[in-house]
Image 1 (cartoon, rainbow, N blue to C red):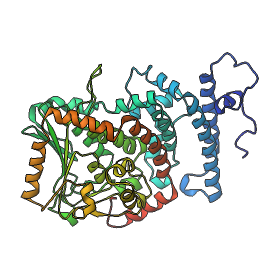
Image 2 (image 1 turned 60 degrees about the vertical axis):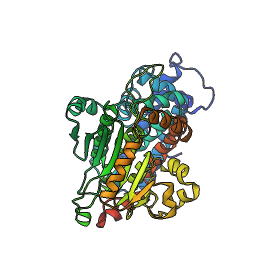
Image 3 (image 1 turned 135 degrees about the vertical axis):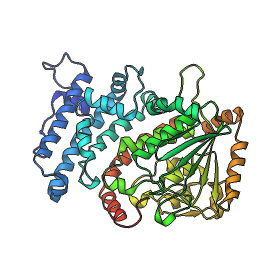
Image 4 (image 1 turned 60 degrees about the horizontal axis):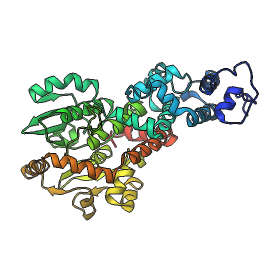
Length: 459
């Protein structure tokens, strides 16, 4: 073992790591969870001691980087083994026996306070947030370990998924004003109700609707409001006219994740990548949770997506959860996340279901673009029209056809077959860990730097 890790394990660490029986000592009166909690802190302190003797990330030699990686790995093994044994008890303690519905960030903050060493302290994360992605220590990986372990459990994970389906405080604060006016401008998204249809218009014209933390916050509030509106039967999602020089005056659906924000360190695991999947995107699928009871499914509504220009990355992910997709004849779809080194959300789950494993591999692994006029596009797009009035009229017709309470009920039954909740939860458990490690991989650091050095700023 390296000099920064003791050659023998304490009794507490032995309990965490499952190394068998150890002799009783003065701490024998404490329960296993209390002992394991102390072992977590001890492991974290050893990492901090190692890091304190090293320069900041960008100034480390290869040998120093290896030493930091080994220290992190040792502590993460302790955390992983701790959670394998105690994740259910940890979640129960943090949520008052599942009586409190904590969102992802709230859960991580509570875990940092109650179980020091398990996840990074908010102050540590705040300091990290000020650094470019390449200069970060990678403490978010520990959040990924924690949330992956929670999501893997049917009880705790199901409760967390349900908590993320509840309306955000921001949406609840805006609800009365929106219901009275029938419209609200959230910044990067506008929401307007017209004749029982909620129109969500993505309007980041300067960056082609490339998503950052601000936009997903706006999107979740808009989705909540549309789903909470009793006068809305159907929702339509579309991109606005752009001000970006290359596409000025043209509508664009979405350019995916904002690579400039990723390079700058402003795309977080919890506040963006996981929040997006478990927040507004999952609400598009299942609806928003408004009450509990013996029969209280989330308030869901059908969604029509209208694609102008292109749906890249996260844009295509939105099409995979829409009930009806209409596209302009010159549009194309792609999921180039593998080229940037990250995982494209729940696309592996949903694209494989929609288009089959061959096409899913071509699109996700090889970066294939699918133009909507290609035969394969019929697996992902329902109708194709020329841009202009014809496309607008098609969107109106689709919204009219999707009205009715029976549509919602049958949509729910289709979802039960296509994407059972436990299948989604299990996928997200793996995604949390994979994506956390991808964010701090050498290839991601290098690739986001190359992409942001050029004109194109988005996936």
